[in-house]
Image 1 (tube, rainbow, N blue to C red):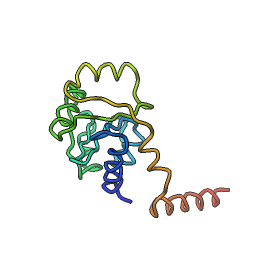
Image 2: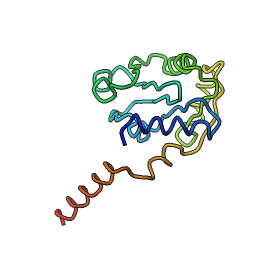
Image 3: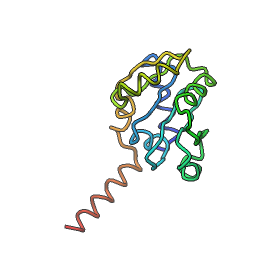
Image 4: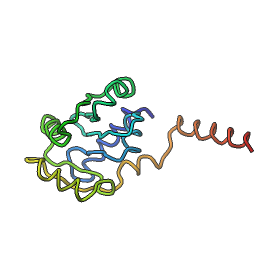
Length: 151
């Protein structure tokens, strides 16, 4: 399954949790949805589109690893950039990974996210990650073979 298909599947789940889009902040989940391997990233995923956010250190890397998304790589005001793109996409109810956000982060967002209702959601991306696609199964088999060879 490619990253676009994963994002589309996640966007379909938005209706199940009563949000217009999901803000993905857990790095393992961002990587699963975008392919980005850096240490600073957020993804906004919804039916109306998706946007990838990182800081300027990763501008070039994200250009190569996340070529299929709108990328915002200058993060002087990350919350402001996120809310601006959410509004541009028509998001009124924004879900966030409540298991991956600190209280301090949530409070900062609440101060900035005017016009967008924040809703904590469960482990939606993790649920997608439970089922492995053919490519992931192939990689797991190769890793097991390498491990067996090492022993």
